[in-house]
Length: 273
Image (tube, rainbow, N blue to C red; front, side, top):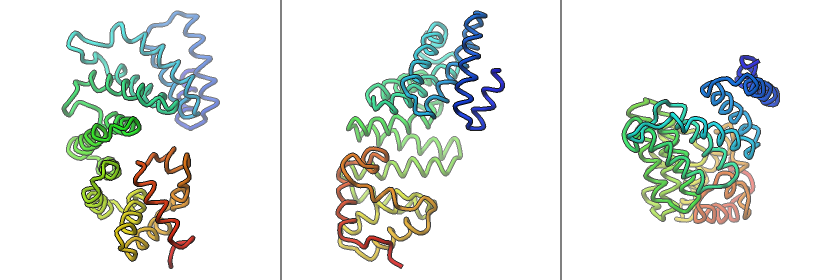
């Protein structure tokens, strides 16, 4: 049953995976199986539930898993004894993000980073990117910028993952814009799209910024590229209403959202040919 549950999760058959994991966990409780097996199942079901946006249930699973692992997961020096322990804090941080508990998410990512040693190449760069995102939501743009910068460095230098490094640098650009450091943001954005042109975020950001600076030709070029040359298109970036997609889902900083509103108010309703 457990094997079928993991197979269903891998196949994105999420309701089936949730049901199978639940049956397995119930059976494991009756059999009084070990902590390692139980925590693995709880964390896996939490992953399914996060994907299903059942964030309350996901967090409940992770609360239990972390409590079970806390008895053996941390060494005297504050480091994790095994990787599953900090991973569970990262997963709970993601569930907290789904609940819009940004401070709680930051606390969980802080704990995970501490368990990996706090600094250095041993820290998971994905966790740093997630913490940067949550920090930005709390208004800590400086902390977010530091996390994105460190994540980009580790992705590029250690993991040799150019796409994730570019994604972290893209987040750096947006965060710098939120800090009012517009020229730095634009410089990084242009560097990223030169090597990795598929970041819609950056083309739209450059369009809004260029329009605000009076460079209408370049602004329309970037907007047209985002709308016509990237598979995701630009439709979502038209949702600039308060509480709309750009604010609540993509979570752009307020000054950049306002520039996009200004851009859309003065440009054609469809991309230029």
